[in-house]
Length: 218
Image (cartoon, rainbow, N blue to C red):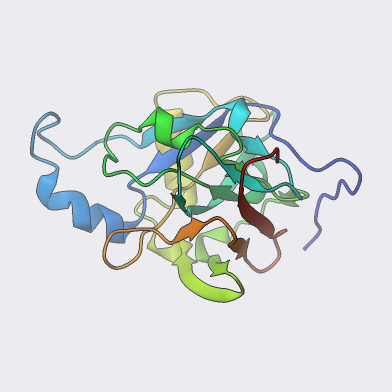
């Protein structure tokens, strides 16, 4: 698999980065009993999206710096789909979608997801492959595998997610659509603290490795 390499200039998104919530079957099933509660009273009919603002972009080789009293963070391993000029997927990237632990997944909590440096990026992009619905992502903390994410368990497959999002918004060239992050069996995500090293990896894609620190600058 050819990788789009930028050895001296690590990749950064050139458009808007959108995250997707509740797009793994396990987490959907865990939340299903509460989907008819206030304030929504029904399961979401369209993909639930949020934006990772530009201040979250954390280029390859930089640490995640915990600030403002945050002592631990949720680890969200995701595949980002990078859009081309023809409205189709051009490339992909593993993305480390950090967030402060929280309990709301219906209304994306911006203050927990859009902190400085809370989107770990790979060194380079990988040209799109049609078999990525079968991709398996491993999450490692300090060298130990703490989660395996199977994209075969997506509620909306990659083609279906792109089609459903395109029904209500237009993705521009350079925009990135993350397919979602999976939870563990109990509904939580892996967590990391200062001093930990987290890596996400999958066959054929550039890995993302970040150290979690406190203070200073990433």
